[in-house]
Structure formats: structure tokens, C-alpha cells
Image (cartoon, rainbow, N blue to C red):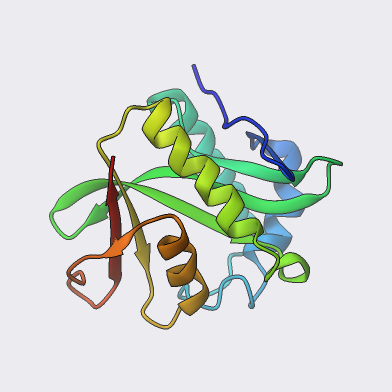
Length: 164
């Protein structure tokens, strides 16, 4: 069974589904949000992103969750996914915040809830963040989570980690 993290002081979390396509397509299609990805995602790619997370909920009991303010305003997504870090499978924390709400600490607050979920609910011994070298805001979020920079991955992606 999938459970999302409990609400924080400003945010609540829930599973994403097909009804979130409009918000997720706008988020993942935004060039500011996706500037450290190869390209913004199309609406079809956003639908595939949602389907991937629905599969993750079923297969692993976790995935990326929708992040909303306590009043219900869409903030973005955050959560946990299994990723490949060179030859190792790692549990990674991820996060995206709509541009108009960036710089207000929402990414750190949401990612911290995901970190705590990994530790307290999934009992994971460690957590990673895989970050593009130019993505300084995400590096700061990882550091605020208590993560330290590990050896870079092949291809130059930065690998941050924390052990619980």
C-alpha cells in the first residue's frame, strides 16, 4: 500500500493520477523547471510521467507525489524513485516546484518530508539525490537535507547522499 508523507507546516502530499495531467504538463513542460533536463516534456511525456509514478506506487509503495499548499494550491511534485547511479540502484529524492513559487523553501520542505518518509516509513538505510552540476538550487536543497556530495557519476552528474 502506498502512503504519502504527512502534511508539513505549509504542504500536503498525495498520489498523482490522470486528473493531474494539466498541472503536471504545465510543470514538466516549463522551460524554467526543466532547464537542467535535456528538454521540457510534452503533454504525452507528462502523461507517461504520471503513469510511471502510478506503476511505482503499485510496484514499490512509493513514487513522486503531488505537492499542494494546505489550501490546495498546486506547488509541484516530490518523492522517491529508484534510479541508476552508475552501476548501483539507489533510492533518490526528487522535486520540482512551479516557477512562481520557487525561492520560498517549498522544495526543501517537500524534499525533507520525502527524506523523512524514506527513513521512517521505508526504513531505507540511505538516500541519494542525482543533480546536474549547473543546478545550484537543487544542490542547496540536498545540502539542507543533510546530504553530502559523493564522487560524481560517470557523465558528470553530481551524487549527493545521506545515511540514516
